[in-house]
Image (tube, rainbow, N blue to C red):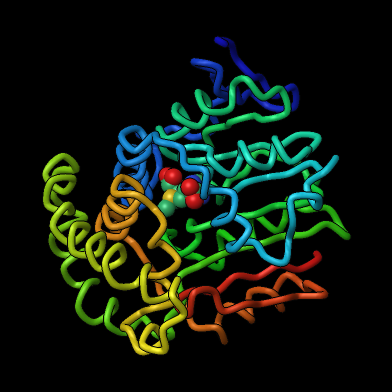
Length: 299
Ligand SMILES: C[S@@+](CC[C@H](N)C(=O)[O-])C[C@H]1O[C@@H](n2cnc3c(N)ncnc32)[C@H](O)[C@@H]1O
């Protein structure tokens, strides 16, 4: 639980505290990355709940990857947050899964995975991963678009996948999100990402309540009943996808969107270049909930 890792080739040493090897020192990372880590660290230490729908949601983000795909693989997760996907990868039979995150979310992730002998949590910056090129599979869900250079984070993650291995990434899309980039982003950039997290927690209950009522009273019922009206609803694919989640989970989603100081909305064309840049083959890019891009390919 406590110790130190020392590099035999140089003088570097890295502490292990509370069971987590620490390869990143938050006091020393660049200020933009530190601000992002501070917000998400707080978020994942507050919203520690688990939800049975996480598995289905995760599979939607990494499709066409299935639970069977994880069996016996050495897996890397870039930006594990509270560890919900690290947990699933371990339960689905990964030989070992290492979840890395820059923020203090690693404390929550460690607590969530400590009973799983094949799950490991490390505090590290996705741009400076302390690994050799040993992974069969790497994935990153909802992280790359919060980095100062999303493509750089993707390339860094891909560089740890061994030849013939696979990588999956899910990012916000530019397409169909103009209402967010035009109306929500200025509020997020100028106000909500700068205020105290406790104040944002309360403030975010207002839009979360609107979304909660809309999904429970309109989107959920109309989509479940197969009404022709459903497809005419604003942002229907996404809002119907989250309509089964309860209040706490929907509040987490709204809080998450308002919290991040950095969030890029990336066009498909740009996402495609990332895959070309790593020389990936068999790439499958999918339009998820008509508001985001998911991709999987072989390195
Ligand atoms: C929206 S959360 C997603 C967490 C997790 N993938 C999930 O879906 O539950 C984004 C995560 O990226 C992490 N993150 C941000 N910048 C990072 C960096 N430079 N290196 C590693 N993790 C980072 C944050 O701390 C946060 O936990």
